[in-house]
Length: 90
Image 1: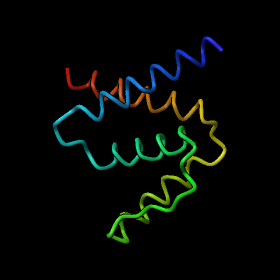
Image 2: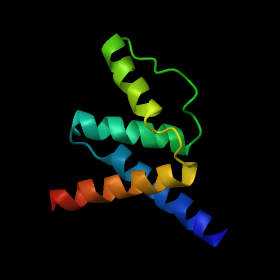
Image 3: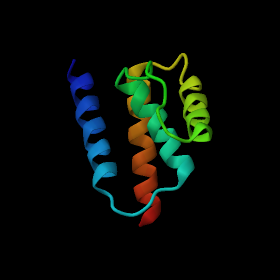
Image 4: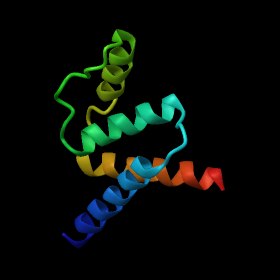
């Protein structure tokens, strides 16, 4: 349970870091984070609700690619992606 708690804290920290960042992110990066986040939080069942059908298609495809991934693994991948992104900025 201690590892799960640490994972949850690290995940929330990564989410906060993304939400507080003011510069624009690359679209492909945001799409990956979207899919990891939705899967990690168990919220992937709702259909994407963008006004743009093309964006909905990309989001749906990204969510589809998460099949077979555990929620814990999605959190780990989200954290890793965020850490790599910010490390590359340095």
